[in-house]
Length: 179
Ligand code: IMP
Ligand code: MG
Image 1 (tube, rainbow, N blue to C red):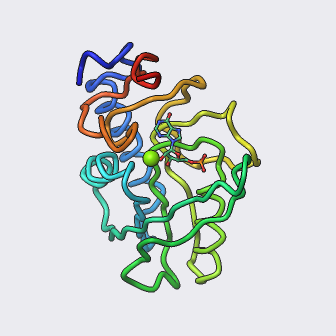
Image 2 (tube, rainbow, N blue to C red; image 1 turned 90 degrees about the horizontal axis):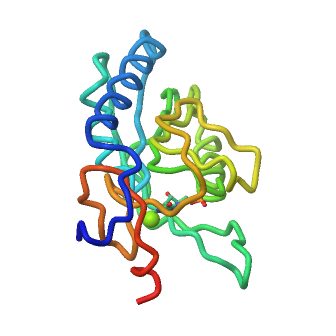
Protein backbone atom coordinates (compact mmCIF):
# COMPACT_ATOMS: atom_id res chain seq x y z
CA UNK A 1 0.00 0.00 0.00
CA UNK A 2 2.77 2.46 0.94
CA UNK A 3 4.38 1.91 -2.46
CA UNK A 4 1.34 3.53 -4.08
CA UNK A 5 1.96 6.84 -2.32
CA UNK A 6 3.69 9.52 -4.39
CA UNK A 7 4.30 11.81 -1.43
CA UNK A 8 3.06 12.60 2.05
CA UNK A 9 1.12 15.86 2.00
CA UNK A 10 0.17 16.10 5.69
CA UNK A 11 2.03 13.91 8.16
CA UNK A 12 0.55 12.09 11.13
CA UNK A 13 2.14 14.65 13.47
CA UNK A 14 0.76 17.57 11.46
CA UNK A 15 -2.73 16.04 11.49
CA UNK A 16 -2.53 15.72 15.29
CA UNK A 17 -1.65 19.40 15.63
CA UNK A 18 -4.37 20.49 13.17
CA UNK A 19 -7.01 18.43 14.99
CA UNK A 20 -5.88 19.72 18.39
CA UNK A 21 -6.17 23.35 17.23
CA UNK A 22 -9.58 22.80 15.64
CA UNK A 23 -10.84 21.06 18.78
CA UNK A 24 -9.70 23.94 20.96
CA UNK A 25 -11.36 26.53 18.74
CA UNK A 26 -14.62 24.56 18.52
CA UNK A 27 -14.65 24.01 22.30
CA UNK A 28 -14.39 27.77 22.82
CA UNK A 29 -16.96 28.69 20.17
CA UNK A 30 -19.59 26.22 21.35
CA UNK A 31 -19.59 26.92 25.08
CA UNK A 32 -23.20 27.15 26.25
CA UNK A 33 -24.46 25.74 22.96
CA UNK A 34 -26.04 22.46 22.05
CA UNK A 35 -23.32 20.91 19.91
CA UNK A 36 -24.21 18.00 17.65
CA UNK A 37 -21.41 16.82 15.37
CA UNK A 38 -22.58 15.14 12.19
CA UNK A 39 -20.07 13.01 10.33
CA UNK A 40 -20.64 12.40 6.65
CA UNK A 41 -19.65 8.78 6.00
CA UNK A 42 -17.29 7.30 5.25
CA UNK A 43 -14.37 9.62 4.61
CA UNK A 44 -14.70 11.66 7.78
CA UNK A 45 -14.71 8.84 10.35
CA UNK A 46 -11.05 9.07 11.37
CA UNK A 47 -11.23 12.85 11.54
CA UNK A 48 -14.49 12.70 13.51
CA UNK A 49 -13.19 10.30 16.16
CA UNK A 50 -10.00 12.31 16.66
CA UNK A 51 -11.74 15.69 16.57
CA UNK A 52 -14.31 14.72 19.20
CA UNK A 53 -11.48 13.69 21.53
CA UNK A 54 -9.95 17.13 21.07
CA UNK A 55 -13.20 18.80 22.18
CA UNK A 56 -13.59 19.32 25.91
CA UNK A 57 -17.20 20.51 26.13
CA UNK A 58 -20.38 18.41 25.91
CA UNK A 59 -21.17 17.17 22.45
CA UNK A 60 -23.28 14.60 20.70
CA UNK A 61 -22.50 12.75 17.50
CA UNK A 62 -24.51 11.31 14.64
CA UNK A 63 -23.77 9.96 11.19
CA UNK A 64 -25.25 10.21 7.74
CA UNK A 65 -24.34 8.89 4.33
CA UNK A 66 -25.28 10.28 0.94
CA UNK A 67 -24.36 9.39 -2.58
CA UNK A 68 -24.10 11.84 -5.44
CA UNK A 69 -25.03 10.73 -8.87
CA UNK A 70 -23.36 12.24 -11.87
CA UNK A 71 -26.21 12.88 -14.29
CA UNK A 72 -24.53 12.46 -17.64
CA UNK A 73 -21.16 14.12 -18.07
CA UNK A 74 -21.48 16.78 -15.41
CA UNK A 75 -22.08 16.28 -11.73
CA UNK A 76 -25.78 16.98 -11.47
CA UNK A 77 -25.89 17.75 -7.79
CA UNK A 78 -28.59 15.17 -7.38
CA UNK A 79 -27.96 13.21 -4.23
CA UNK A 80 -29.65 10.48 -2.28
CA UNK A 81 -29.62 9.70 1.44
CA UNK A 82 -28.15 6.26 2.03
CA UNK A 83 -28.22 6.55 5.80
CA UNK A 84 -30.16 9.23 7.63
CA UNK A 85 -29.51 10.64 11.09
CA UNK A 86 -30.76 8.72 14.13
CA UNK A 87 -32.14 11.77 15.91
CA UNK A 88 -34.13 14.89 15.12
CA UNK A 89 -31.85 17.94 15.01
CA UNK A 90 -34.29 20.71 15.85
CA UNK A 91 -32.70 23.15 18.30
CA UNK A 92 -29.21 21.69 17.99
CA UNK A 93 -26.11 23.57 16.94
CA UNK A 94 -24.95 21.39 14.08
CA UNK A 95 -21.34 21.00 13.10
CA UNK A 96 -21.03 19.01 9.88
CA UNK A 97 -17.69 17.18 9.91
CA UNK A 98 -16.25 16.47 6.46
CA UNK A 99 -13.04 14.94 5.21
CA UNK A 100 -12.64 17.21 2.20
CA UNK A 101 -14.48 20.09 0.60
CA UNK A 102 -14.04 19.67 -3.12
CA UNK A 103 -16.69 20.89 -5.60
CA UNK A 104 -19.00 21.55 -2.64
CA UNK A 105 -21.93 19.88 -4.38
CA UNK A 106 -22.41 17.06 -1.86
CA UNK A 107 -22.12 19.35 1.11
CA UNK A 108 -24.51 21.99 -0.21
CA UNK A 109 -27.09 19.25 -0.67
CA UNK A 110 -26.55 18.06 2.91
CA UNK A 111 -26.77 21.61 4.26
CA UNK A 112 -30.05 22.23 2.47
CA UNK A 113 -31.47 19.03 3.82
CA UNK A 114 -30.36 19.74 7.39
CA UNK A 115 -31.49 23.38 7.32
CA UNK A 116 -35.03 22.23 6.54
CA UNK A 117 -35.08 20.41 9.91
CA UNK A 118 -34.81 23.63 11.93
CA UNK A 119 -31.52 23.31 13.79
CA UNK A 120 -30.43 26.29 15.93
CA UNK A 121 -27.36 26.73 13.71
CA UNK A 122 -25.28 24.89 11.10
CA UNK A 123 -21.54 25.16 10.56
CA UNK A 124 -19.02 23.16 8.58
CA UNK A 125 -15.73 21.74 9.75
CA UNK A 126 -13.57 20.18 7.05
CA UNK A 127 -10.15 18.65 7.47
CA UNK A 128 -9.11 19.54 3.92
CA UNK A 129 -10.19 22.27 1.55
CA UNK A 130 -9.54 22.37 -2.20
CA UNK A 131 -10.86 25.87 -2.98
CA UNK A 132 -9.73 25.73 -6.64
CA UNK A 133 -12.25 22.99 -7.30
CA UNK A 134 -15.31 24.73 -5.89
CA UNK A 135 -18.36 24.87 -8.14
CA UNK A 136 -20.43 26.97 -5.75
CA UNK A 137 -19.63 29.64 -3.19
CA UNK A 138 -19.57 27.21 -0.29
CA UNK A 139 -17.06 27.97 2.46
CA UNK A 140 -16.27 25.97 5.57
CA UNK A 141 -16.30 27.65 8.99
CA UNK A 142 -13.39 25.53 10.22
CA UNK A 143 -10.68 24.35 7.84
CA UNK A 144 -7.82 22.06 8.86
CA UNK A 145 -5.64 22.62 5.80
CA UNK A 146 -6.00 24.17 2.36
CA UNK A 147 -4.50 21.85 -0.27
CA UNK A 148 -3.77 22.13 -3.99
CA UNK A 149 -5.91 20.40 -6.62
CA UNK A 150 -4.40 16.93 -6.26
CA UNK A 151 -6.16 13.66 -5.54
CA UNK A 152 -5.36 12.74 -1.95
CA UNK A 153 -5.81 9.57 0.04
CA UNK A 154 -5.42 8.43 3.62
CA UNK A 155 -6.76 9.39 7.04
CA UNK A 156 -10.22 8.34 5.90
CA UNK A 157 -9.97 9.41 2.27
CA UNK A 158 -10.16 6.66 -0.30
CA UNK A 159 -9.38 5.72 -3.83
CA UNK A 160 -11.71 2.88 -4.85
CA UNK A 161 -12.52 2.33 -1.13
CA UNK A 162 -8.88 1.68 -0.27
CA UNK A 163 -6.14 3.67 1.51
CA UNK A 164 -8.53 4.98 4.20
CA UNK A 165 -6.33 3.36 6.85
CA UNK A 166 -3.19 5.34 6.01
CA UNK A 167 -2.40 7.45 9.10
CA UNK A 168 -1.36 10.44 6.97
CA UNK A 169 -2.77 12.34 3.97
CA UNK A 170 -0.84 11.59 0.82
CA UNK A 171 -0.93 11.94 -2.94
CA UNK A 172 -1.55 8.77 -4.92
CA UNK A 173 0.89 7.72 -7.66
CA UNK A 174 -0.52 8.23 -11.12
CA UNK A 175 0.40 4.68 -12.06
CA UNK A 176 -2.32 3.45 -9.67
CA UNK A 177 -5.06 5.26 -11.65
CA UNK A 178 -3.77 3.91 -14.95
CA UNK A 179 -3.66 0.26 -13.90
P1 IMP B 1 -17.88 17.28 -3.58
O1 IMP B 1 -17.44 18.40 -2.64
O2 IMP B 1 -19.35 17.17 -3.75
O3 IMP B 1 -17.16 17.37 -4.88
O4 IMP B 1 -17.45 15.87 -2.98
C1 IMP B 1 -16.65 15.74 -1.88
C2 IMP B 1 -16.41 14.26 -1.71
O5 IMP B 1 -15.64 13.75 -2.80
C3 IMP B 1 -15.56 14.03 -0.47
O6 IMP B 1 -16.34 13.84 0.68
C4 IMP B 1 -14.74 12.82 -0.86
O7 IMP B 1 -15.43 11.63 -0.53
C5 IMP B 1 -14.59 12.92 -2.35
N1 IMP B 1 -13.29 13.54 -2.71
C6 IMP B 1 -13.07 14.76 -3.24
N2 IMP B 1 -11.77 15.00 -3.45
C7 IMP B 1 -11.13 13.87 -3.04
C8 IMP B 1 -9.74 13.50 -2.97
O8 IMP B 1 -8.80 14.23 -3.33
N3 IMP B 1 -9.49 12.26 -2.48
C9 IMP B 1 -10.47 11.41 -2.06
N4 IMP B 1 -11.77 11.73 -2.09
C10 IMP B 1 -12.10 12.94 -2.57
MG1 MG C 1 -15.06 9.16 -1.08
